[in-house]
Length: 145
Image 1 (tube, rainbow, N blue to C red):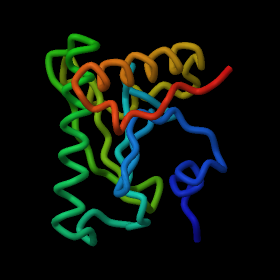
Image 2 (image 1 turned 90 degrees about the horizontal axis):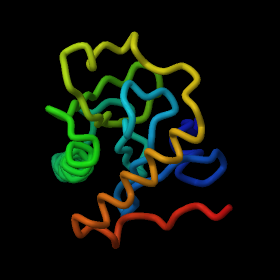
Image 3 (image 1 turned 90 degrees about the vertical axis):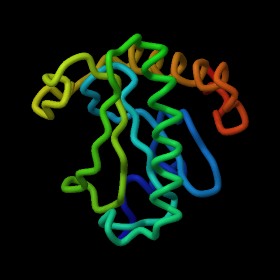
C-alpha cells in the first residue's frame, strides 16, 4: 500500500519541499513543533529505519545535517533536533527541527493547525538559506502563485 509520503513525493498531495535528490526529499511537516520543522524521506518506501541499508542511512543523515545547519542559522536556534520515530506513517522519515530547549522535543507541542502563510514563509526561508549555503542544485524552485 502506498504511503502518504509517497503520495506527497509523487505530487498527488501538495508538500512544501525544501530538498530533492535522486535518493530522498525533504519537506515541511504538516504538524511542526517549531518553525522550519522538516522531514527527510527516502523515495523508496521502507517501513523501519533498521531495514534501510547503511548507504541510505548515511545519505539521509547527511541531508538532515545540511538542513539542520540551515535551520540553525535561519532561526538562530541553540540546537537542532533529530528524531526517527516511525509510528504514525510506515515510511522511514527523519524529523529535523530548530530547538532552543528540551521542551522543543515534546511531541505534544505539535501544532495541529498551523497557519498556511507562516508555513509557506518557513519553507521559503529554509530554501533560501539552503541556497545560500551552496545547496541550490537540490533546492526546488518556489511554488508558482
